[in-house]
Length: 182
Image (cartoon, rainbow, N blue to C red):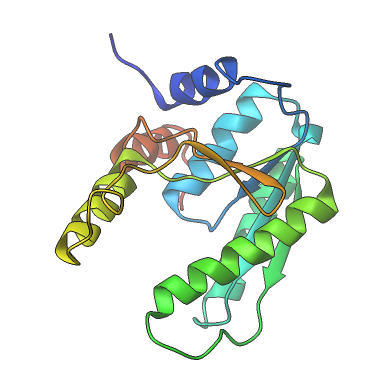
């Protein structure tokens, strides 16, 4: 049986233990994974229950244009959008890790202020495989090689990854079927 990305998202929330989220935050970069997640959620829940945030780390000149593109899509969908612009990242090695931490901190602050019940991230099976290979290459132990967590709490915010059962290619096909660029 073919399981579509829409089925993945719907199933994820049908299996939700505890109170079903009434306000859903979505971190949308403008890439295919997060944009498809937004569209799939907009198909499933009332748009007034969705709030979107795009993080601009200030590291790439085109990031502001990409955030404006996400804002335009959100306006078309009838969902609220905020661009979170970060200042300078802390100095040190591993820029990706520092950017990820700053992104989680900013999204967490946004989620608490916006009173969202959960923040959804567009991580997929493709991301999980890439993360595993990167960690393996760094010599991580068993704990470091563990799979991505579908749902967790951090700093009083519930985070989830409803697309871990699908691939980036599936999401890109979903967007192409909607004539939606990313």
